[in-house]
Length: 147
Image (cartoon, rainbow, N blue to C red; front, side):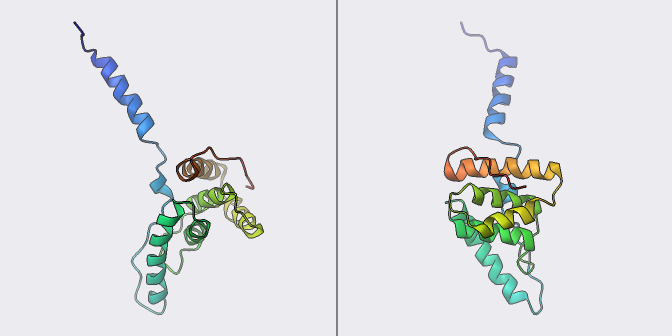
């Protein structure tokens, strides 16, 4: 007769959790849209909120333009439409650098966004980017560090 081992069951559940739930979720690099404040820039802000939501769907399908939009908005806030997150912005710049469709401007944006960060922030950006490259392009990230 097969006897159940509770410790083995626990370890199995724990290991499944480790493989199924990464400590750095891809959601951490998805722009957080904000409520647009009334005023002169409200219309621009609302347009960016709509655009960024479309860009997210396209970016995960490998669309470089959408990836650039996300990286830009995470860095600048896009007229108050998105919460600024330099680590996430840097991660998307690293994804773009791994896309095979980079421009001189992409390299410059990567340096400008990523270089001023702390070593810990750079490590977090690399880890998030690695996860994104795997999800989007189904391959490991190539070291294209310009930080």
